[in-house]
Amino acid sequence: MAPRYLTPSANDGSVKVLQLTDCHLFADKNKDLLGVNTYKSFDAVLNAIKAQNFDYDFIAFTGDISQDYSVTSYEHFAKLISFLGKPVFFLPGNHDDGPLMYRIFEDLGVNIAKNVITPSWQFVFLNSEVYAVPHGWIERKQLDYAAFCQKRNPEQHMALLVHHMPMLVNSAWLDTQTMHNSDEFNTYIRRLHRVKAVITGHIHQEFDETVRDIRYIATPSTSIQFMPKSNDFALDNLAPGWRYLTFRPDGSIQTTVYRLENNIFIPNDNVDGY
Ligand SMILES: [Fe+2]
Image (cartoon, rainbow, N blue to C red; front, side, top):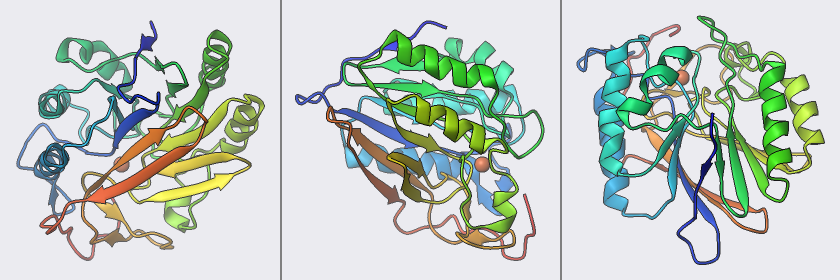
């Protein structure tokens, strides 16, 4: 897959990225996920982003675009996100059909490049999906691809994007669904001395921790939110959200999470899983 070269718009060379994640769309626009209409919540998020009028260079979508593996759900995604008028890059989540996405997205206007390269940073989109199970696993060839990207462009700082968080988040049920070979992942990426950040979805909550100089960041879903630090499955009434990231030429990252105001997307009580 050919890499995509981008020139950032900021004068100082910073790369500005909008991260969106876990929209869980259905073919049926009227369908709910645990009481939240995911089509409407995603549409509301996109409208709120447009109204902010912030500048950014591209959109990174970190998986779980679909909730039903359907072609129609991916068509909804492509149509809705085209409203923002920016390049979109993605990786598959555990609720996605990865091979289907790579087959159809290019014709729908979604980029299928897995390496986005700018003068100061490069971004590598990795696949941690294990078909039809919730946990993640990173194949050795994915890690080798990140190493290949570093070798091809050794001067740039690197951000790796992947659906599953390669560390525990102190939530017993969710921690069974983590990247099951996260030790291998973290050991490998530490040897790639350019990796500064790992950006994920999957945990449907805000997360930002630095371990051994690598920043691990996750972002609220545009649909349902999981209750942080809950032992059992539990939903949070916080609003759908998104994140802006500024990757500076000196290797530092500045980031802010936003959520919808006046949240009308409240999930059902008393559900015990999803
Ligand atoms: Fe998800």
